[in-house]
Image (tube, rainbow, N blue to C red; front, top):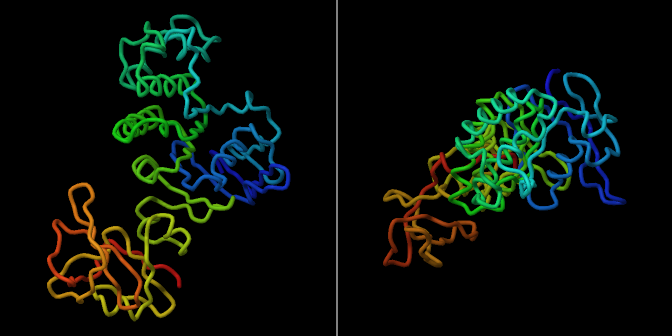
Amino acid sequence: MKGLEVRDATVRYGELVAVDGVDLAVEPGEIVALLGASGSGKSSLLRGVAGLEPLAGGVVAWDGVDVSAVPVHARGFGMMFQDGQLFQHLSVAGNIGYGLYREARAQRRARVAELLDIVGLPGYGGRRISELSGGQAQRVALARSLAPRPRLLLLDEPLSALDRNLREHLVEVLGEALRTTGTTALYVTHDQDEAFALADRVGVMADGRLLQLDAPELLWRRPASREVAAFLGYEPFIAPDVAAQLGRIRVATDEVVGIGPAGLTPSADGVELSILDQRHQRGEVLIDVRLPDCQTATVRAAERVEADSLAVALDPAGCAVIPG
């Protein structure tokens, strides 16, 4: 196939297996994000694709050609890291044009100006790196990584050092820049909102394995397992008989329901459940209730409830049905 293909990739650090037989494909122009907790193997897989870590087994191929033994600098892949790694002694334009040394000066200037426009920093070429904010510096790092037109861009948590409001803004800038330039990208993050906002497909990794890779809406609606669902924030998991009591959702006998953050809602015609606790969070009230199977679930409400119980029902749009 064309684009990136990873087959049975394994990365080891001594006796530790960081990546365990992963298969992955990224089509030309596609953005794939890998999610996972620290130690899940997502960054090790990225480094294996880049050639920064040798594969203990498996193949990394581009357009059907095995590049597993090709040196890092000869793979035609670009990388963007969390800290940007900008050169303090060079101007913004000097940083962006660093990888364009083989091009004529006029072409280099035109490419730098084009990328400054794409990342939203027109006219910043003459500035020093020390004059930039953290968000501006990451935009420059993105422009620099795009400048040589890499056939694949590998991004290792590039926004994780920024505050949430800035991350939410820059993920839009990043997505627009990648799509404007038609760049094929593999993006590693621990932030689910980033991955779902940016990627065409999202994968979940744990213990060095790729558990599921799907379009964002399919991954959210149909997690392949309890492990994936729990990572995405579904809890608790209830059996078909409990789901039937809470209503509005049908479940086969070999399935369970994962209750998402908005999966249980107040309902006048719902089931009365005992209230265990109530607390405020960001303009709403989180109400813990005891389910019929004695598990605890949380209901989001606009205000506190002045009673010992609350009538609730399942909202199918906020729940996931997964194999039991």
